[in-house]
Image (tube, rainbow, N blue to C red; front, side, top):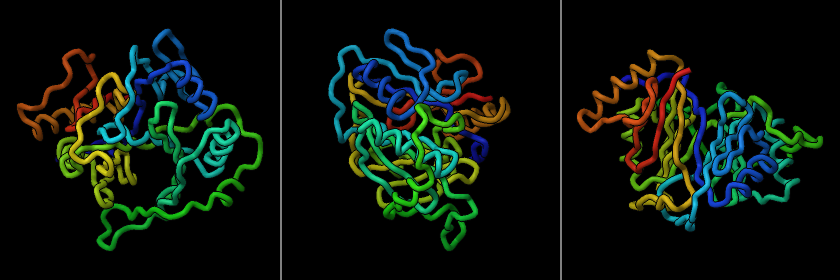
Length: 289
């Protein structure tokens, strides 16, 4: 399989939520995503008003999210540097919202929390690529889970946090709960052309262009599980952006070659967009700049 476009980036995610007003308030006021559009059952947020990074839709009669179902583990918001990450930490803390964890992953520093529906969020900043540790064979990256030096991080920003995230903040990766890690990793690697960068017990991390990961996969809670029902809050779409039309055409040829007759793009999608579902049913859409 030809590697996927090395300039790939995640443009947006769509989440279904149980209470649109509550979730919009959380993502705008607590996390700091500017509100772009608010309609009756839909909200769009993000630093770039031309390309909303987060799309929220309301479920009419929501049911609880089953904790063991496959689906979203977290959406990870990448900050440009440690100071911007520290500012977001202070914004979340000032709103009284609890953090659930913090880790030094070697390649990055990260903190974790959940939105009002229990959907996971990571906020993080990368270390410079030249400082990423590599395995002995040189392939991929070495990712670890160590205690985060929160005191040192917070020292990078000791002012009053701005109400909104810095404009350069993006979705760095999306981490998924899957039923079978080898099956999911094979799809992202062999069908889509992502490169496997690291493995942990019951987890795999894949990326384009040598990044540590654009997609995380784990079965820590979801081994053998089905997805949550449509009535439960959760991930509805990941939109990934390629550099140009040629990269999108190359992806489509690769998918046809890897999946054969089983490859079908969603018929209701507009031209210049490829949409398909991964082995756990997550909808992926690819567009170009």
